[in-house]
Length: 101
Image: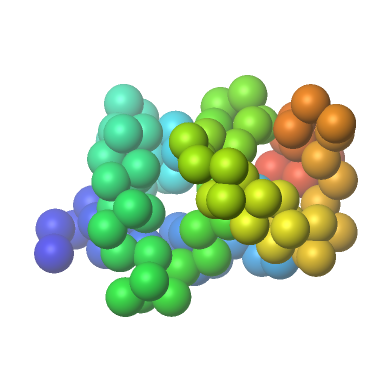
């Protein structure tokens, strides 16, 4: 595991319930401001094995970026269970819910 990957995993684990971070924000905190796609790959390949709160990661505009309807539903459900409000258009207010480590 690369140092970047280990740091991304630690950052994702640090996101508290009821808060979100963006892929790009996580990448920047891990030292690679242009590494948002790497964060996506890490989440995709390591969420289960590292028990990551993947549902707390959204895209730069505060939207859920999962392509499958089932995945979107699951992420919305988990975020709403943590009292994150999601608009009818699937928008999360980053000013209110963004976690800044």
